[in-house]
Image 1 (cartoon, rainbow, N blue to C red):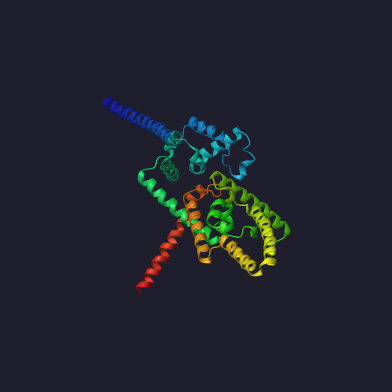
Image 2 (cartoon, rainbow, N blue to C red):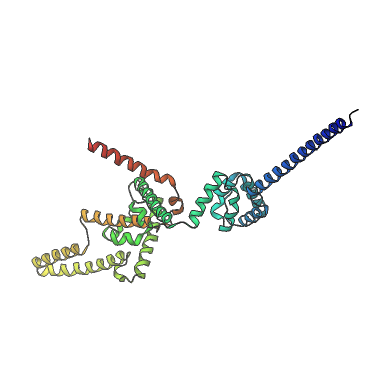
Length: 341
């Protein structure tokens, strides 16, 4: 028997076994490394549990935090709200940011950077950070967008006809209306019943009119307007005038008995003076005053002074209002095309 050949065969067998075991070890090592890598990637692409707990804990304590109608009944306590928020954050961070991103602090937004590989999460993070610390160019662009959206909404309100109607504007700014238009109108006529109006409606309107008159008088007093010019003093003046007229009539009757010609002339002159004392504007001037008043009210709306009557945040963030200007551009392009033809 050749011992060298046997040793060579055994040696070859051992080498084969060694290579096999080495390969198995390498495979196991590679698998372990891959598992560790996956674990690290998972940790890198998800928020830390403590951060998620802290964020949802703070949000759950906020008053008037929005919850969908489907879960409102189960969001009564702080713990219930936290549980709902935590579930949403882990299940769909993009929707969480869309719904509650505006309530998050700067440091809390940093915790979402681990999930920026998600396109929607990244999009929400960029937009939220623009609002928190915008560049000068973004501020300028935002200002233009807001101005255009308010203009578009103003055009919508004008076309609807209610918000910028005379009555609605007078309700919002009674003193301003009085200065531009009201003092040239028949004040007593506002309390008269209108055609087709029920008695209860007339009474209601009179009560509302009394409130507006009070607001006008308060503003007149604040500005130091002479008491004789206060709105609502017309009745008192009329009563005084009636007494004076009664006395004048008695005197005129006595004069007529003495000298009929002179008395008649004096009576006519008195009537002419009263007519001149009443301020009445021609229709063209009245319309001009109304246009000035309306223009001021429109500017007040654009500058944000109507916040008691409108939700400016909703208007300023309404991207659908941008469509108004796209339609305007389209119409302008059409007009230009046909003009050139």
